[in-house]
Length: 202
Ligand SMILES: *[C@@H]1O[C@H](CO)[C@@H](O)[C@H](O)[C@H]1NC(C)=O
Ligand SMILES: *[C@@H]1O[C@H](CO)[C@@H](O)[C@H](O)[C@H]1NC(C)=O
Image 1 (cartoon, rainbow, N blue to C red):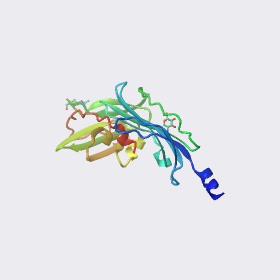
Image 2: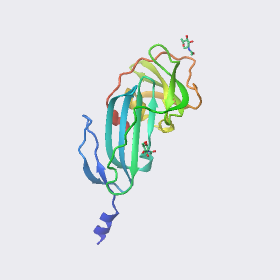
Image 3: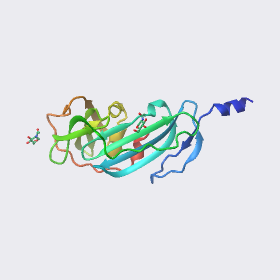
Image 4: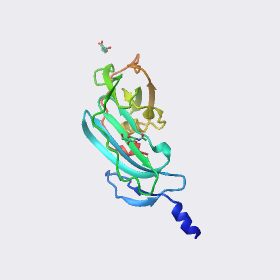
């Protein structure tokens, strides 16, 4: 009887954690006792409106993991969308990420190979300007762009890490058009995209 009650109390979810090739096999699993959200997430990198890569995952987690994040660096845009629900096996469908964000009127600087004062029109919930410096093999790269609030609040900087694999980075966000200017902005080197998106779902 006790066992029966315990089984009724658990939350079942669809589990699909991509392996290094980016694919996964879906299974049914039970959430651990601390987790009460069935999560389906889609992460994608866009260049303009073309999708460079996409990765999907299903897991069980806590409500803090239910976030949509967006980081637009002008040269590319990285988006993570999650949907959460809390009934058995409810994380059936993956969220669809849009390749065409709606301009929201905010403007920030972005860096290309020539300069760091190019104008970027932010979209959707990218209400902040962001400036990041990453150190990679002795080189310091400056990245600028638009970001969502949840991206700015993310202490693990997972979206930027997914793009650069750099261990050392400094990220600051600000509100207000072109607030991510810098006195000593050096042009960014175009960073090569690492198609290992799954690292920023964690
Ligand atoms: C993220 O965006 C999707 C699609 O726009 C939406 O359905 C979902 O509720 C959002 N998730 C959160 C946590 O806001
Ligand atoms: C951007 O920077 C270039 C070179 O640093 C400068 O010539 C140009 O006036 C700047 N443009 C704006 C809009 O600030």
